Amino acid sequence: MRKVVVTGGSGFIGAHLVRALVTAGDAVVVIDNQLRGDANRLHDIRAELDMREIDVRDEDAVTEAVRGADVVMHLAAVNGTENFYQQPELVLDVGIRGALAVVNACRRADVPDLVVASSAEAYQTPTVIPTPETVPLMLPDSLNPRYSYGGSKIISELIAMNYGRDHFRKLQVFRPHNVYGPRMGTKHVIPQLTLRIKELMQQVGQGTVIDLPIQGTGQETRAFCYVSDAVQGILTMYEHGGHREIYHIGNDEEVTIEQLANRIGRAMGVAIKTHGSDAPAGETSRRCPDISKMRKIGYAPEVMLEEGVALTVTDYLSEDSRPHQTYHNPLL
Image (cartoon, rainbow, N blue to C red; front, side, top):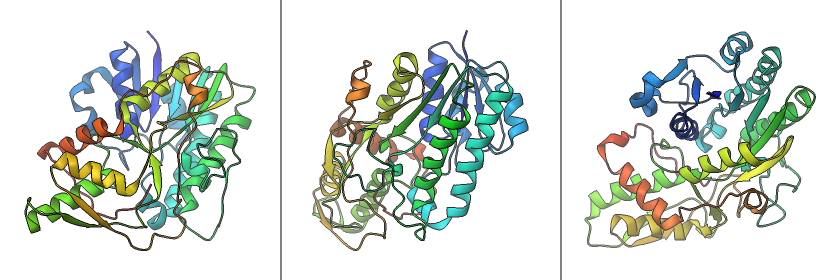
């Protein structure tokens, strides 16, 4: 039985990854202080997990938790666009000190393999679309708190690749691109649009076109990856990918935010008319990953946006999703 440690294992992607690992028969340790995570995501498999309520910045505690592990998958971070603008100091502190603590803990405990989550935010506005892993990383403006997250991920990659270059059997970095799905919280664009449309439907009724205000023109593009595909991508990368390699985890089905809003509306049974406004400084106009490197090792996304949006909308309209945060409607 393989022992796998997942930091941020109560987070959105982390919890789905933990479930897949348990299903595969792995012994899983979850490190999460529940700052952004939600232990309820794992309540039904709690008895099968070793749950450690640890701050990922606490190197000594992390070292003890990872002893005997075959691989540590480091996903802990303060995500959510709203947090980048409102809590940049916390984003940076958890991102950078957490990466240092995890890498050093793995070295101290002689963990052979380390997988580190980066982000598409490390590119900001890519110079090539679809974007390969080789495009230079970018920090356009250190005065803009938006880049606290992208900056922390760039530094995390440097820490992993350099601190760990002589200490690991396998060291990998993955850059997820706009992963979405059930129970992802409410600080991301798909649940925010869903809940906003629901609110407007309650105000104007179901038989009319919903006038939906959005940030930006609506012509900005993203490529959204359903969470089950993202998890399969991480596992495929770990099993078949190389040492000291970087991989995109995503889907290359690029859509505009206006198209996304219309698909959410269709899943809810209403027509949508979007109304644009100014986007926050630092938003990226276009983003889509080149996933050919992942395809070469056997990865292929299976859930296209129409199906994934329908599944996600159904979850967010159910009582079980329990949304508890306010709308901000950023683009991701």
